[in-house]
Image (cartoon, rainbow, N blue to C red):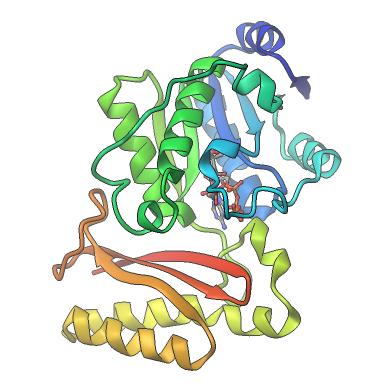
Length: 276
Ligand SMILES: Nc1ncnc2c1ncn2[C@@H]1O[C@H](COP(=O)(O)OP(=O)(O)OP(=O)(O)O)[C@@H](O)[C@H]1O
Ligand SMILES: CC(C)(CO)[C@@H](O)C(=O)[O-]
Ligand code: BAL
């Protein structure tokens, strides 16, 4: 596996490797990320190209009160895991390489960025869209893979790629879960033992709502019951909604996407599933 830390090296490696399937990450890799790399391998094989993964903890997508400083980092472990997963090229820009002094351009994606994570984390999707556009242009990736775990992010990136006619195909990959249903996330490591034991209740509750909706229970009633059930178990629910899958607009109609964000202690868990 080649490692690039500056743009000239990245461009030279990319030219040598042929069409790239890119997996953008913030590092602290787990089996969810490695499943994206395995899917990227299949895409790369189909187009006679190679797999690239980026590791960059993007300050632009963190608010001033957020956890940028404590975001987990494990470069050596990540590089070993990427190599073992068959990644050909790791792109590890520093903040200065990504945002040299004077950098002043940002991308605002109206529509799917509004509400939910966009409301809870003002400026977050502007940071995500900007860094993803840069990662696509830096690597020249023909395909980029994103996890469905960050459902709204996936829709924002798709919208941006369409709106800007970026020559990259965006692929969503199903959420990889722990045995008890908890969506894998780098931040799960901050759950205490007691919180970890409770955390799978979020996914179970989403499944319960999906079943209730399929049985004809109105969305408002099913969601209200889920909200109070989670609160009783100690979750602080940020939002819980049935939305149109692509626009993220709230809906009462099926099929839709059930999306949720809830905090257990200091850890904010995200999850979503299809409904209907
Ligand atoms: N459990 C998962 N299943 C599938 N894809 C995932 C999973 N977790 C993360 N991803 C995807 O991996 C990519 C990189 O995500 P990121 O590095 O933010 O990891 P994370 O575990 O989501 O971390 P965070 O704690 O910030 O949520 C994103 O496209 C994200 O959706
Ligand atoms: C897509 C991404 C790598 C952009 O920084 C990040 O938001 C993430 O890891 O999901
Ligand atoms: N997985 C989304 C990246 C973030 O939380 O900032």
